[in-house]
Image (cartoon, rainbow, N blue to C red; front, side, top):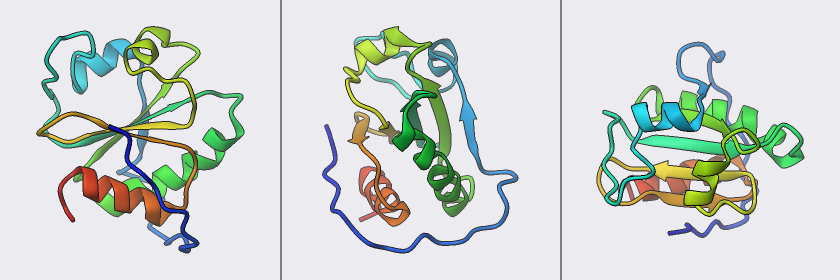
Length: 138
């Protein structure tokens, strides 16, 4: 399911320096270990917390602009949600499974239910809004 995003002009919030709550780089094998087996027929979360995964590429300019935004969003959730990044050029199998054809592509994985996706670059507050919706907080 792709979540619809409204174009919003919300200002970015300022958070403490990026220390504890950040976005960690992983590969498709580590995804299976810490989040869920993306090859399995049934989606079963392995993580104890909801997860947001940013699928990106080093050459993608919108992906580069999204990186600091997601660090701020991770600070906003204060450890309630885990954030990861996966390079699409180095992890094509998982990209095929999730049918990733455009980046940036965020996969929002609640503890219950199927993952949701968000495609494109948006203001920080819009990511917080759609993550909250995906996690059933609205």
